[in-house]
Amino acid sequence: MNFRWFSLARFGAALLAAGVGGAARAADSSRPPAANAPAEEDCATFGRQLAALLNRGEGEAALQLLDQFALLDRIANGLGFSAPEEADFRAGLFKTLPAALKQQFATFSQTKFVRIQNVGGHRRALLRLTTDDGAVNYIGFVCTRRGTGPVRWADMFIYLSGELLSETTRRTALPLIAQSRKGILDRLTGTESAMVRYFPAIQRATQLMQGGKRIEAWAECEKLPEALKVDRTVLLLRMRIAQGIDDIKYLRVIDQWRTAFPDDPTLEFISVDGAFLRKDYAAALGHVDAFARQLGGDAYLDFLAANALLMAERYPEARARARAALAVEPGLTSAFDSLLTISLKSRNYSETVAVLEELRTAFPGIDLSAITSDESYAEFRLSTAYLAWSARQKEPSLPASSKK
Image (cartoon, rainbow, N blue to C red; front, side):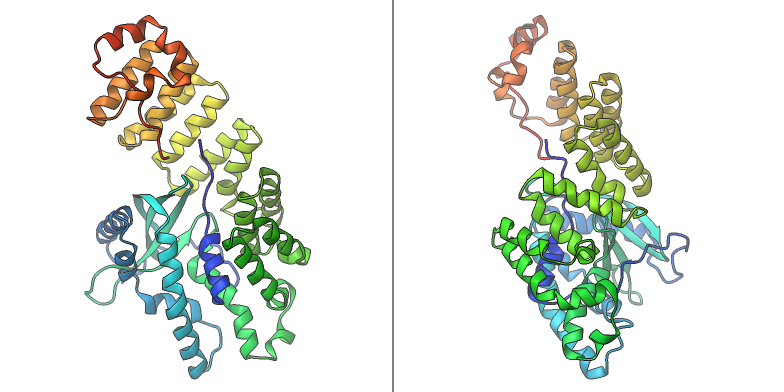
């Protein structure tokens, strides 16, 4: 089962390769929504609309709901451009940013509207997104409205990266700004200066990764100064590269993130995967629940907690968390998978039958044909519960494995 999160590294990679993209700032959750913010009900309707478009693979339509001028204002604000420089900068972003977003949207296979969040004077439509390879992330789309016009999104907070798209884009734009202002390098210090100096190497690593040459991309990143390796943008890039190489490198990047950003709100999120890889299921459960508290809760996180408990062989608790997930989201098929696994592991075969019947009720016409051959059901097939159940079935089978 895949518990791996996906990150903004895919966005960042596209931006770095294209040559576009402030420092990360913690979100101010203390301020209430601005007086001119769209109403919460309107934002919720918008969030459901956006999720429906992405579920249908209509990424282009989802992009049409972006207020590009508002996003570009957020990116360019405070960069100190002259009018001609800002016009050139915005023109470049207009060409590259929509393509990067469209590329990312195309990877989403399942999208779920979760809730509206009030953060930093804005309302966000929080969506849970699952990619074709089963990786999960949460994105809060910042809602905006011009006058009496429709609700649109002006930015998005990506939970795995722990910052807004505008902030990531600003950071990756810094080297290009330095190219047009030759004296700026002398005024930069620390990782900002290093980012500018080593930007060509970061671009090469990005392009190697996109070309499937992950070993070479990792080697390119290893040449970077140690301080730059733990810059947020570079960490995201290295995490994305490491995911495609081996768990040792992937865990190393997670540990480096923890050291570099010990108070980062994203830390609980990225630590879940590392705990599962280490088979430290108690820690995984702790990270899941801590992140759920930050997020405000979600059925998928209850499912993930159920699997941590399942792997720790804490079956009653695992069953309760899977049931909690289904109580909130009855169509969460991965929670049914957890319940089936719990029943099989605990050899509670009457429960296995009950869950199979629940599945049939929840998903009429579901394919259950593999139950007669799947190895995980071998003992179940020998049980009296199965023999009695199968006698009542025309086509006994196993539910198709969850995508989540």
